[in-house]
Image 1 (spheres, rainbow, N blue to C red):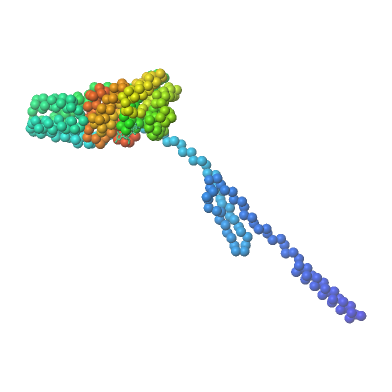
Image 2 (tube, rainbow, N blue to C red; image 1 turned 30 degrees about the vertical axis):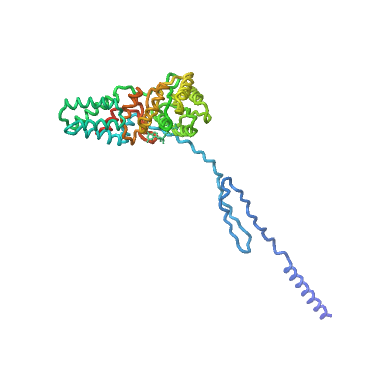
Amino acid sequence: MEAYLGIIAIIVVVALLAAGGMFLLLRPRGKSAPPVEPPEVRPVPGQEQAPPAAVTQDDDAATTTVPPPPVKPAEPMVVPPVVEIPPPSAGRMVRLRARLARSQSTLGKGLLDLLSRDRLDDDTWDEIEETLITADVGVAPTQAMVEELRTKVKVLGSRTPTEVRELLKEQLLTQIGVDTDRTLHVKPHGERPAVVLVVGVNGTGKTTTTGKLARSLIGDGNKVVLGAADTFRAAAADQLQTWGDRVGAEVVRGPEAGDPASVAFDAVAKGVEDKVDVVIVDTAGRLHTKTGLMDELGKVKRVIEKKATVDEVLLVLDATTGQNGMRQARVFAEVVDVTGIALTKLDGTAKGGIIISVQRELGVPVKLVGLGEGPDDLAPFDPEVFVDALLGD
Ligand SMILES: Nc1nc2c(ncn2[C@@H]2O[C@H](COP(=O)(O)OP(=O)(O)OP(=O)(O)O)[C@@H](O)[C@H]2O)c(=O)[nH]1
């Protein structure tokens, strides 16, 4: 009996051990971590092309995504317009005098050499005359100068280089006119702005001169409005807009091929409204027929005069075009009352003498000279500086 009880006890122990083993084998081993979902990466506006976030991937491990550092949304680029402050107009001719180098060597030095010869025979006087004519001084002024020089040289007898220079300077200044009033009329009339009308043949530098003049007036402390009444050439309005934007001058423009007079009127109205000092109106210089030109410019002027007075009619003339340019200029002078000449491209031409002939032909003073393509290469004309530059120091 005891043996039976022992066997039963052994069987119970073995059964208990087996059940415990089964429990250990089959019990759940704990929860495994859920796969890590990569966080959603939202495209940042303007950063769609940014490189993807760095991803580390083990062969059999879950994918881990390292989120990119936070990127601030790109702010829209607002570039503030850079408004330039141009230099004042005073002393510009002195600064730009070296630009007259070609006129200096042909006209100035040529004449000084000839007049310094010991013997001034007829051939030499012919050469002097030729030099003046070639430099566009014009026939009548040339003859007047040669006559005066002949008389003075006879009186002087032998001449020192200084005397020759003084003699020539005196003659050139007499022909150019030292006492001529070259003031640009740009003073406002109380609340009303001064108005400058810019006329001339296309390609002479009219739009460029309008832009340069605006800069120079702003440099002198004036407030300026520009009128793009050259509606004939679409690019002219854009060109003027660029000039205006650079110096903060308002530009009034109209539709392409629109009525120039209407643009001129609007520009002056804007100038009155904004209480500016000067309104400069760039016009189209189509030389189709004289009557056509007269009608167009006449209308522009009449329409402006409903609002203000036209203080200055500037005729732009290209110094390099010689007699042809002069003929065209004459037509303009016949249809409008030109009050001043802006002589452009005087840099790099040997024909500086055109200053003398154009004033004589048109009876109007040269008030401004263009001495280069740079924005500040327009200078108030100063005869003394001009002649000194021609003759050298
Ligand atoms: N070297 C030199 N070039 C100048 C001068 N003034 C103007 N120019 C150049 O002459 C060219 C013609 O100038 P524009 O102002 O476009 O001529 P425009 O008379 O207004 O012509 P339209 O607009 O067609 O009427 C441009 O390349 C200017 O840079 C100057 O004084 N010297």
